[in-house]
Length: 387
Image (cartoon, rainbow, N blue to C red; front, top):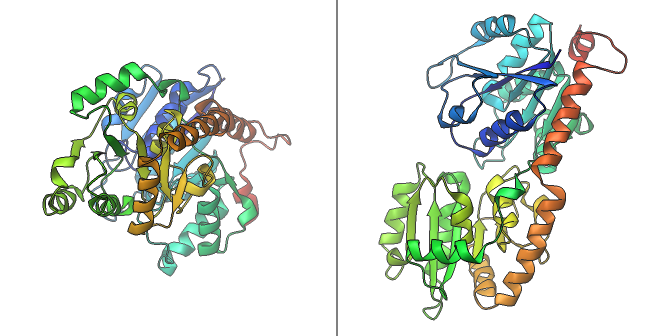
């Protein structure tokens, strides 16, 4: 019988975590694994990418803001009868409590990023509950070592009991193409010699897009640059207003909205910038690197685990506009440097951050829980520890 996994997420809206879950479900061996998805608040656009003929999807439709979903989650667990329940991020933490009370499946809890760029301690009740969730779970992991260390520090939970599974991307979808580059730049109105900078992601405060705009606004007039910003979010109006208020900036910035053909868009770029105040492991960063783009990234969160400064990209202190400006000028003035960094970036992703490697790690995790070496059965380690 296939191992049945109940995936609990807040939503299936477009995002790095949600994209990773869809890829995992699509690519895991259907002969060995069966998937059920339950979202807390709403489904979202990515639900359409899941194969409905073999993946059951449901939503609890919880109201915005704080609402206890323990009883609905417990009912869903009883109805699903999973071998493994996997809850992701704080918004689904109570699923672990519901699963622990059911005592009929193994429990996995994972952290994929922070809700904001604030690395200050959460309120004590939240830290205490997160620690309890960690203890109840059979496996706890994060997508970066930095995120693991952060949660160990915040909760007091032993660091050596939090594993790390890095994100991975489908590298075969992202590759450099001169033909695609020329066509995409023509469609976007970007000249062949213009230095095109790009960023793809949610336009939220934690992504810190404003630092990119501030940096390009101070580039010397002799630098013929263009900036493409792809994505939607709460910061869009503020970013548009900033660009419009700077002479010589508004006409060089393209706000593209949500883009569905990301591989073609990446090919149009000369450099990719990620200025986040915090990241787990950014899928958009990995995609840019797989496209052989030189990348400039903030030394925040899991970014330094992906990019080695001066080898597979360039780092700068998060929020440091002047440092980012200097890095942009480095790349703008040296096609040879761009080529060298881009080549190293592509090899780095192929070797360490492929989707295939990530899938194998998830399959091993789930198999080890469903078929433990000691064959204890369905009793969880959390129950043995806490009872």
